[in-house]
Image (cartoon, rainbow, N blue to C red; front, side, top):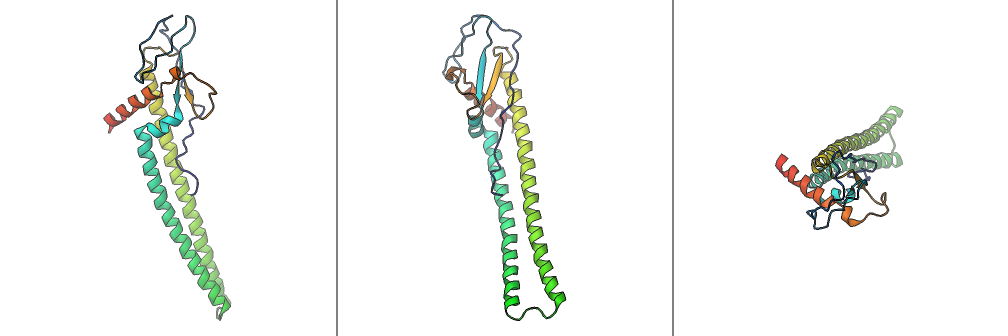
Length: 198
């Protein structure tokens, strides 16, 4: 339960879209973020990139999913901790009884041991169950985000301006001129679509 539940790994997402309408040496208007668009060079592809790490912090759908998952994770953690406290209390009572008078019979001793074993097993199973549920929910969100991003990129590139749009995450792209960064444009567009869909 100590693992971060909102680690969204989008490395390896290929967002390349081949341009069918590539125009030659054409100066393009500035983008919404104020940076000039990269100028197409005759016969060369026009490439852009989206900073995935920025998407995680700026997209409304990510913020909402993170809040929802964190709240659920905290609820699950509280329940697991309550089970752990109950086990520790039962174990302390078992140890105290063993030190004082012990159990009147072997059968009672074994029953007390079995009860402790069952409590420990149930706690571990509950923790595993909740971890699996959170992972499933996270995976479903990641898939939804991936689909939304790819669909929006298709809309953004419907004019075929970009030959390739890369996903930048961490240092998987060692250097890229900021004029190729279309993250802000993507964030604005996706947030607008997200609000309309709600």
